[in-house]
Image (cartoon, rainbow, N blue to C red):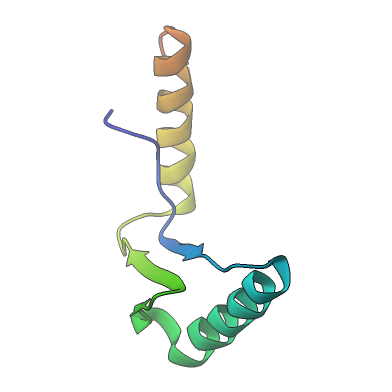
Length: 83
């Protein structure tokens, strides 16, 4: 396995500002922007970066199996095998 498992949708957001209040306002703006633009949202400015990733083949079952394998790899164990 390479890297941590990912869900079907992942939204990465980075917000920067000079004050806490400005950072919160920017984050609120980003949330509204993502909500109004949907899955196709992507935005970069001097105060934020938004990236949306989608893996249409990822299912909850596949994610759970990948999490189990990832945890086993980190712990240096073998993944559990169901009978």
